[in-house]
Length: 93
Image (cartoon, rainbow, N blue to C red; front, side, top):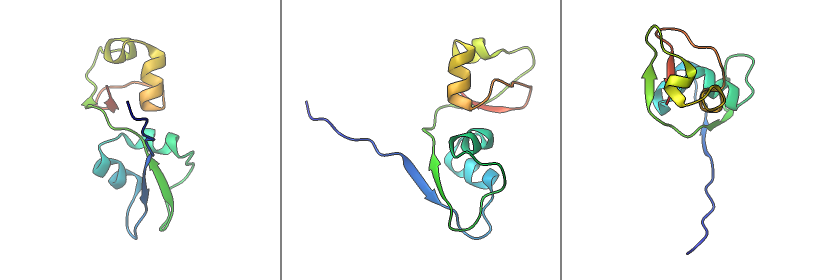
């Protein structure tokens, strides 16, 4: 068996791109992209972002919980960068 290094996917922000548009392009929730890159404000041109591994993007419906969606609150937090959950939110399963 050969050991292979897996490098994180990165993206250089282009003029006119926003956090939301980049997240949509890579199929990740904007909140997760912000958390992964320790962002406190909008992205700037030339900035390098680490793109988290994508999963199944899902839109939350009323009555669902973190545990129902990801097996535990901790798994939900790791995948989505938050423990907040509300209807219409896009999360990774």
